[in-house]
Amino acid sequence: MKKVTKEVYLKWYEDMLFWRKFEDKLAAVYIQQKVRGFLHLYNGQEAVLAGSLHAMDLSKDKMITAYRNHVQPIGMGVDPRKVMAELYGKATGTSQGLGGSMHIFAPENGFYGGHGIVGGQIPLGAGLAFADKFFNRDAVTLTYMGDGATRQGSLHETFNLAMLWKLPVVFIVENNGYAMGTSVERTANHTEIWKLGLGYEMPCGPVDGMNPVKVAEAVSEAVERARSGGGPTFLEMKTYRYRGHSMSDAQHYRTKEEVEEYKKIDPITQVLDIIKKEKYATDEEIAVIDQRVKDLVKECEKFAEDSPYPEKNVMYDVVYEQEDYPFLPHKL
Ligand SMILES: Cc1ncc(C[n+]2csc(CCOP(=O)(O)OP(=O)(O)O)c2C)c(N)n1
Ligand SMILES: [Mg+2]
Image 1 (cartoon, rainbow, N blue to C red):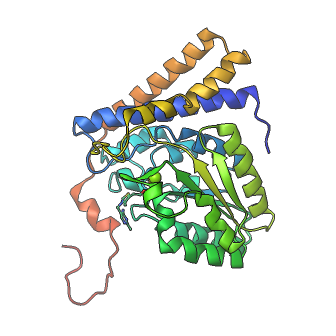
Image 2 (cartoon, rainbow, N blue to C red):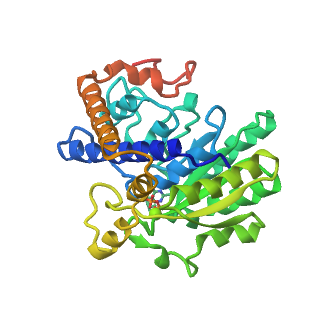
């Protein structure tokens, strides 16, 4: 695995803080109805992304996930202003403002969505890996899912073929304890989700998903296996989300105390503690990072606010149509 240096810790701190603050801003503008539709936030789970990115080769590897997908493309290099604009439904967004919260998409940066059907991205991730293997592209696809998604049949069909064909894919379940308001304990008689890999003889295991170092170690090993022809791995990241499932969630299914317990092992705090303990940065240098994060969030907000909405006629250019379809006039 690539070394976790002082620079890596500082990058992790700045990235994770930015992702957290970026989404805090989204929550605020959502309440003002500037961002509409669903809004599923990632906060609490940032170490999974930070550690994974450390293990990837961003020049060729790919990522695909579910609808909790605003910060992953940013991590992969997409301009955060364009992501915020997409959430505002503006023409400058990653999908011209037509995809919205659940469908951030940026294949030029190796990010393939952004999927609202629970478990729908699992076979798609294997498909991306199949194409890379078929065309000898030496790339690995990281395929993320929630704990709820592991109860879908699509996972089993995908695991079977991915192992049979030794596809270069890493399956990562972000077990945040709940699928909407349903706890893991209420969805299956087993709670160690990683064990689902055993039935397919797929290398698998649990990972402390609140610690980016642990995540980086596990994902690096899995990525190396995939890249060297060893096939898939299934990792269960034990993580947590502090906010509700989406913005309209009264959270009656858990206690405030439970949320507070997890905040004690918050990934950003853990990384900051190490930075301070190892003297990787002074308080003044940390304050500079904090200010830079604040300024960038503001810049994203301003960019989205100032951007225009898409022209109405763009909808005819972005949906599939069969130009010679005989029964409807072409372009209304
Ligand atoms: C096939 C399907 N069934 C149900 C839903 C409704 N739904 C949206 S999110 C969700 C919970 C998924 O939870 P999990 O996979 O743990 O992901 P998390 O939200 O915790 O990240 C459900 C049931 C859906 N979008 N798609
Ligand atoms: Mg979940």
